[in-house]
Length: 512
Length: 119
Image (cartoon, rainbow over the protein chains, first blue to last red):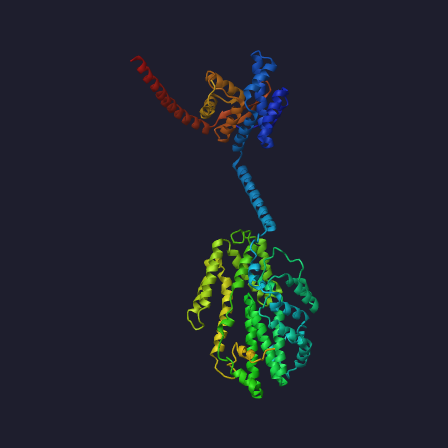
């Protein structure tokens, strides 16, 4: 038997139906929310039903009005009828249609979920609630400004003339009195020598005192950029930084490159004085360099500590070189002061870097890439994560290795999605600190590094950000190795000038 | 008598299938036949009938066809399919068992009460 015939349906619907019954039919049809063809079929059948009823009841002697009333009363609830008819008709639809509808709903659902995800990517905001910078700065701002080196250093750096480009491309070890570029070096030295007393004043302050992310950081960058006509730096010194950008240590240290330039300035200055036989001035410049480096080493961040240590090593190396080259020419009392100093004594404590700042800034980065309460237990915000990654691949920072930091933090932060991750991270930090604080020759020192290396490639390690630690650890090891190498040298005149001979030198009145 | 909706739920499809085994019928005719053949015990309103017919059709137990009546008006006739016939036979057996079981249950209770009254 074939199904409904459109012609037959039409012949039914063309016949007039009393308005009460027509309205009732209409209510049911409207409530079914079926396809048009299905509605047409149901309408024709209901109308046919009513007409049969009218005819039958008329045959029983009822008036049309009474017949209509009987039919309406016996009909039942039109809304419920519509609902049940819809259910029955839908059940009778072909399987392929049902599958198509289900697939469409699933697609729409997926599109909706995708849209919601895009909206989440676009509009989700982090909720940084802990000011880790404040924690980092706590022990710094408690000292009065006049006791801190940074304010003086900042003003001096702003007046400091940058190294000519022709010199900055050279290997400083090759730039010596008598070399082709020395005339240019001397000109640069002359320009900046009036600033040496200010540098000495900074070095004489009891505390380093650089405030991380302080209000003057942007201002310092802007003034530095203007002083040096550095358009790139000016662009980075935006007056309104993105408040939702994760704060990275590398971005908080705008002065680091200039401090390194000052360090080389003082080494060149010492070379110039030594070549002219002005040994006291040479030693004085190296001492100043060393003391400024020691200030930098007080910094809370690993990079400051490493730069500080490197400059201290550099000044010591320069001292050894001058001692070797000009030792015979030194005045006897100066030579005696140097050789009687603690040349063979390593002051280990002076050069043991720490990672306290890195730890705090890692936690800070976590709260900038998660919708959390600062505990790292929120949901990752992909746009914030991408922002952090982008910060890590910025050309300038990537060149000097700072970009690696952002990339590692980003990777680590991605896995720091639960409170216990941060807790484990802390535990790992503390464990490493215990190993690092063992004596240099203790064979167990290597255990911490081995533990991190093992964790770095495991899922557990990624979760606990061990890769971040694994990247930092060799730098600490390098520092320790360096201390061991210098400590093992026994040459009285050259190798003996270790990392910290300056204490006695200063006591002897050599410091500016 | 007004029956509980749940009680009628399984009965009406059986009634409709049973009637359609006699011959093909259209909606209004089924309403009348159900009432007449059950001595007025069962009554089918449109709100019950058409959803029921569409459900049975969706299950493949009945099929429909528009035909022209003598009056020239269109009527949609429903008839039993082979699957519907099989289902009806199965349901009738079940119904028979059910009625006998319920009969024993109800009459048994009645007999016990009567035994107490006349002892």
